Image (cartoon, rainbow, N blue to C red; front, top):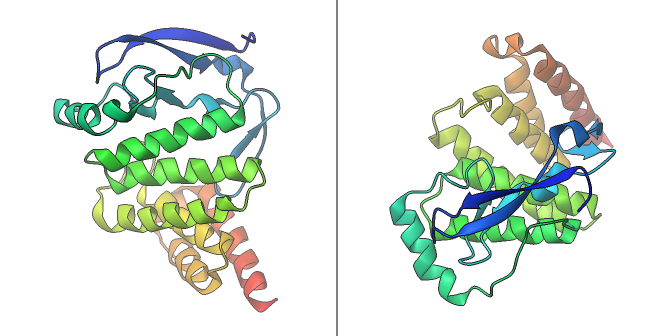
Length: 223
C-alpha cells in the first residue's frame, strides 16, 4: 500500500465485526484545482475514492464521517435487506477509481434501504457525478440531475445549516447544477436570487463565484 494511505480498524455498527478501512493521510492531499460545483482535483491521491467505508461482512456502506452514526432500527433494515444477498469482498487497501465508484454506489443503495434525508442523497449523488466526470463518463449528467433533485428538497424541507452547508451554498448548488445540465433559465433565477440576498453577502467567496457563474449562464443561454 502506498505511503499516503493507512488502515484503521473499526467496528461495523451493523454486524458488530471488526473491519479494516483505508484512509488518506491529510498531508498527502495536494489540491490541483476545483470545479465550480466544488469537485476537487488532486496532484496526488484523491481522498474522494476512499470516502466511503464498506463492511466486507454485511454490505453496510456509508461515508466515513457517518459510518458509525446509524440507528439500531436502520441497522436491522440493512441486516434484513442487504446482508442476505451480499457477496463478501474487501474494500480496504488501494482502490482504483472504479472501486471508489462501486463503494459510492453501495452507499447509495444503503441509503435507499434506510430512513435517509435528502441531504444524505445529495451528498452521495453529487460525488458519484464527480467520479463520472473524472472518468469522462456521460453518466455524470444523470447523477447531477439526481443530486439537483435532492438539493431542491434540502432547500425546501431541511433545517439549514447542516454542518458547514448553509442555505446560500444550497442555493448556489441548485443554480450551478442547473447550469451544468443546460437549464439556463432556472440557473439564472437561482443565481439572481442568491446575488440579491443581503444575508448572503457575508460569504464573499461564494458571492464572487455566484456572480461569475451568473454571467456565464446568461452567455450560454444567448449562444
